[in-house]
Length: 326
Image (cartoon, rainbow, N blue to C red):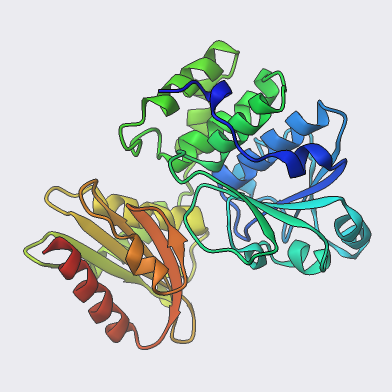
């Protein structure tokens, strides 16, 4: 296995730019935010002017990552900085429109995407992608090492957080020892792994049990209990203080059940509009289910947003999973 320092990525656009704006998808998660903060800190150490703008404020659960309050909201005051920067970089997404207002404000100026998800991008988008990486944070580590940046604890902390988040505490590694070796290296550099684990996994909202109870109440099985799914409709969220990360917990719990090989959750996001989140165990590749619906992800974790009758959506997804299983 090649060490990270010898694995090259096409990072010339990042090195050539002086003023850089970073952003990540709406409803940001630990990977997108961690990767953005790590890249910002690393590129600033090279003397670059780097700023992070989001469509909305950082979710409360991730404020611990942004210790210096570097992340800003893309309001009218930010428009000139976003439009005039040498480079705009979307982190943890290959769909730049998912960043919301930051990309809208960018206009026709050069854009780049750094992601570990499979997907198609327009010809004008500079893509830095490695779908074998555990997270976008892991890609950022490689970028910074390649750029000659010294990885300090302040840079390593958000990288470690992004890896922990997207591997669900190193549960989903696909037998890649690189990820664990990088985690060990970051700990040796001074990253407080215990504190980060507590921030990510021991900080659930008190409404989490109610959410799980409502979602699991209508869980159903198919294909000899090898597939399980549930629906989270708008009424399930009434009176609950939860976010997208908490909803992610639902499908993670379903795929962890004994004998289950694939699981999916339909979360209602509008009138007859649903976010489909699919998970599978290692021997099943379910990426096609998301891709054919305009979504993205990985072989074992993917998602898409679809419109239509919920019963028909369930029927179609079940049929496609059945074909994959068979």
